[in-house]
Image 1 (cartoon, helix red, strand yellow):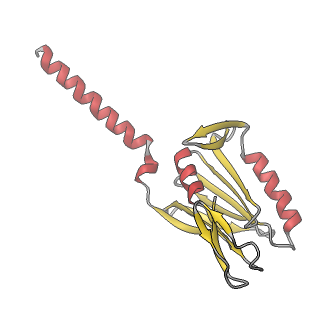
Image 2 (cartoon, one colour):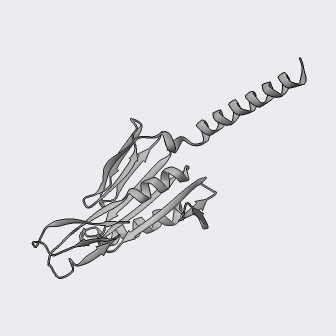
Image 3 (cartoon, helix red, strand yellow):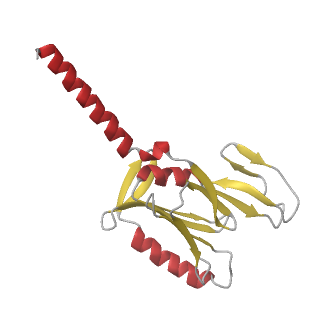
Length: 185
């Protein structure tokens, strides 16, 4: 074989290896997502899968696990006055065990890296909608996509705090007791 043919063959093999590696290591790009309820007032987009489960414990803490994409979401709405204290303490323990101490900036989002569990995590405590959301995943791209898709709604009991501006959207006064989608985390 002449040198020109060898060079072309080497370049072709290298290109195939690069394309194969990209397909294996960038699975989040090729995923379809669906919106699920995390609490009565919070939703998120998660990868479509038939290998998932969800569960609500006796304190009202909701657990979602996606075994195919190694995604776990634990959520609690603190408006439940009956289980608030115990639920809040349990969420704090879960958060401390799941989140690592190493902060990592991925795509402009601060994540916590847990080397013991080999995953990334993020915790959201939204005082306005009373939601606490803990998201962990071994894939930081999936984690960030789920985090950026979080949406919460607020049950309005008075019209006094409806002049709320979120991401350039202005919400005006509405009738008492209406649930308004106000927040995108």
